[in-house]
Amino acid sequence: MKKLILSAIAIAVVASTFTSCKKGSGDPGISFKSRKGRVEGSWKITEWIQNVTINNGGNTSTEETKITDAAYTMTEKEDGDTYVTNGTVQAHTINFDKKGAYDLTQNITLTSSSLNGGTPNTYTEANTRTYSEKGTWNFLGKVDDFKNKERIVLNVTESVSNTWSWELVGGNIKWTEYKNTQKYANGERSNVMHITTLRGKEMELDGEIDSSSSSTVPGSNTNSTKGTWSAKLAQ
Image (cartoon, rainbow, N blue to C red):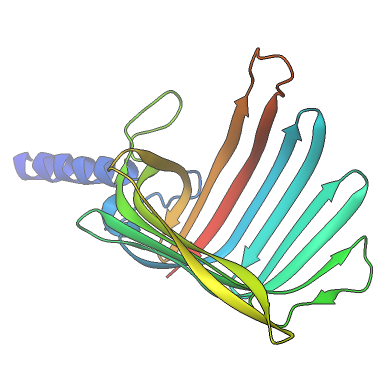
């Protein structure tokens, strides 16, 4: 009887440990890997959707961005006009190191744009947009309605992006690419991601965008950017 009771206690302890692994709505009820162990590794961002509304001194515009593992589409609407930009995705990845470091890479080549459904303007060169960042990552604890380890914070220590400029040389357009590098102290610039699903080789994230600025200086405007984003990752 004593042996049976001890076995029952052991099963209860193990079961409670497994069920406590569930944080997000899409998490598995039971996992043999720690939450940190499930995040660690190299991930391909297979879908990124972002919708924002921008108010600039009373002028309102919207931006809808969708990035899959192959295609990029951005739809901008302002003053009754719709501007669509399309592209192809060469890379969109994020790596979480077990020692707490991370790096993100995004390479997109813009291919065409159109206004109000008209004939697309096809791009032929100098339209590759690159962005990368690196830093440290960790889980956030229980805050408000968020559970412990339900969110990840990315502390950006460096970001690199590119810009293009052109000039006429001998009657021909010459394009020059420039790199823009920003460096930060650890904790100076941070991004927070809410984990909704973390199971097997799948992870889903989301977040909110809500920033505004105003001033009592005569002639100044009140500006705001509000929206949401979501992402799907796969290994």
